Image: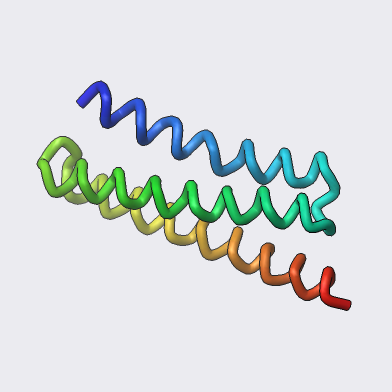
Length: 91
């Protein structure tokens, strides 16, 4: 579980870190959008790690489901921000 926990933590930490990096580089830019894309991918990776931990019974089913739902919500919000940034970039 230690390796899986480490992967879960790294993926979870990567999401806000990449959002912050994008803002630091100017969120309404191609570079900022790239970091939002990475943040969205990190959320997908986190969900995958949570599903594997759940399937292998290393994470309680109910806890995994709650974390997966939260992760999906974060991924959706990052996606919507990314769509908004891309729309602004295209104008």
